[in-house]
Each structure stands twice: as C-alpha cells, then as structure tokens.
Length: 106
Image 1 (cartoon, helix red, strand yellow):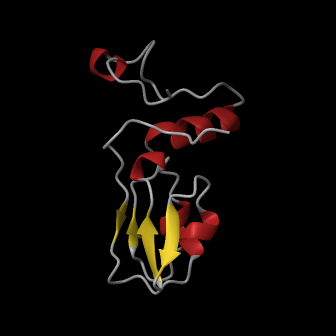
Image 2 (spheres, one colour):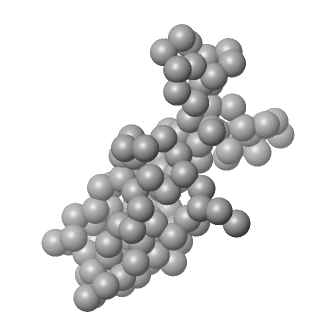
C-alpha cells in the first residue's frame, strides 16, 4: 500500500526533542508511521504523512508533541464514521471558494 500523503507543508505537528524521553509511545500509536526512535529520542520521518489525529500528543507522557487535532482528513474520516456518512472536510464541492482551491481529502 502506498504511503498516504496530505497537503504538503501544512501539518501543525511539532516535536520538542528536548522534552522527549524516548519512550516510543508516539511511534506505537501513530497510524502512519510518522515517528522513529533514534538515539533515545523521537524523530519525525515524514511530516506530510501526519493526518493530525492527535494520538501521539495524547499519549506522550512528557508533553513533547503538539498537533492541532480536529483539522484535516483525520477529522473528516472520524466525523463521517460517527455520522454514518462519507468523509466530509467541507472543502472541494460545497466548501467555500478558498477551501475548494485545496482539497484536504485528496
């Protein structure tokens, strides 16, 4: 399966490597393998693969990770599942003109 990518250079993901204790929780919970643990610290391998679900930030015991969850494709997929509908991130068809110029769902 090819790697899932979203809009380039828009992710809100931030990692403070100084706070990181290398526990590896981020790498364990990330559904897209955004993290690797090297030299007892987390590293982001490909920020554009981040779907901003927030699992890494929620599970980081040191508070070394920030991501604005509830935006982008992860939110659209989760909200669609909860509603029993297709993912809808309000961009593209039916979104505002500025939103339709960039599709957040591919």
